[in-house]
Image (cartoon, rainbow, N blue to C red; front, side, top):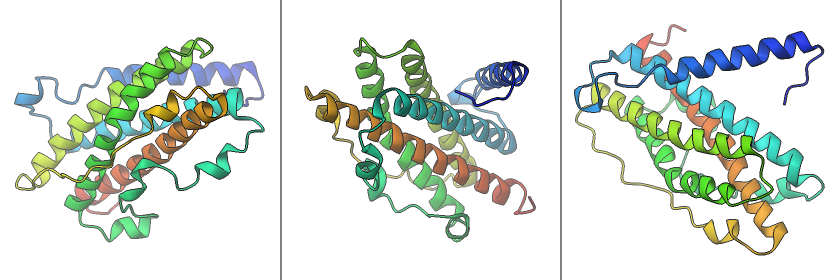
Length: 225
């Protein structure tokens, strides 16, 4: 999936990815269990930022691979714009807007986005597993993203508990209702449903990644970064 000029560069990228993935897996959010989480706020932010970047990398790879394999010449991108199930959530469009939002509100927004992906990620794994023509890498990425999204949720909930322990959990969720489209008999409709879901996943994982980096800078380093 990389455009590299030499096999040596490709090998370095593969090795880096392997080390990065191992590092992500070796950092549980709460080593002693969620009920007895003694991880410092700085360490929690380090872990969720690393985790969100990992999820975004996986979702980008998955989308690019699907686009090359199934979507070429179908004009899907024009139909996919502004059709994500999370579009009902009012998210800041850039860093300047995000800076204006109080940290507790931004954290709750991140939680809402992550919760909104629980069901579609579960269904994505199920439906990709049923696609005979789907490559193994696509299914393994879908499974990994689903697992890591749950871990990221756990981490954000722990951060909220430390930063704003009195804040109630957000009850505003975006409902995903596109499962029938993923199961459509018409190939073009079915492929577009997959394409749109992966497009939205890449978009939202990028937003979460950026928001968490911004929050880490604001909360841990008092904006001195």
